[in-house]
Image (cartoon, rainbow over all chains, first blue to last red; front, side, top):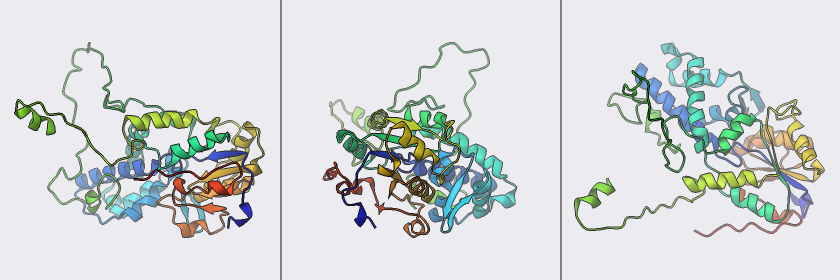
Length: 212
Length: 141
């Protein structure tokens, strides 16, 4: 493998985006973990779910395709799943399906969580350095991704998150004038990891960087 | 917490945040690097492009990318993390460098997926195997 390629000509480099240049799977993994934690707390479920069980569910193309056409790679090739297929699998793994939680509810929560996270997706180690290296050598480069152009735009730009914070810690300027009745205190967000003392899923013990 | 500790006394203490995190990973540096990364690309082709009729593992997107760069796709290198992307690159006739993600076990890539090089990180990209390229120097820690 590779021996026939010695000093092969290189006309251009064609990059995949999600999982190759940017670390999409970590963000989607953490998002899914937090949602499952919240649901497990709500339904008082103790679930033994592992990182290895969850990771295949959030394959980069699931995120890259905006959840419209989730694809998960398995040993025999590409197993195409419907939009809610991976969600049904995640619910079955945690036992949330027996509590009446629907896959669509999980998909909706996950998609909205990913919208807020897209602008925070980090680069993968070595990606910017290698891109610069090719540029310096005068080699044309292109990104060829199955993500929608809208999704790519969000991933590329430093979008303001719904919470009002922009990347880099700069706060969004909010309008000073509010309509009457709009000043009630905002409801708190989802509980943070380990916020409750009651038994929770073992997944809660996983740290937010995706390690157990 | 640090702030409250320092404010307790009247002494003026300078504080600095020291982290082993690389600047391109998180924070404002990451934003700049992401902007730079996209600015260095000659073109970006997305899944909703009108010319992209079939999703990966169909070769459409890579053939179109090569066409837009006015190069022969067989002289291109596709860098991919997923088996379906690697299949797409191989079907297009390009050389394929696989950088498997955490969820893609290497043993799965060997099954029916043609990969010319398999590396664990982009730092290990086989630059010296291609003409006109020197090795990428990894910064020492």
